[in-house]
Length: 58
Image (cartoon, rainbow, N blue to C red):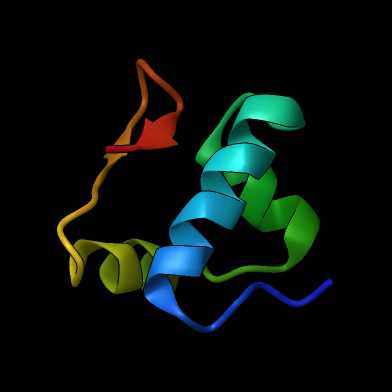
């Protein structure tokens, strides 16, 4: 499934995937074929950054 393009919906989608299926952002991006840098930049544009300790964007 292609990730949502809307940043707010993408945030929810990514955090759900991280919570339910992946132990790290790198694992998620590799498995889903997502460019990690672009994802980080898109979510940073709405004020969210990846927290490795929590394994989610906050």
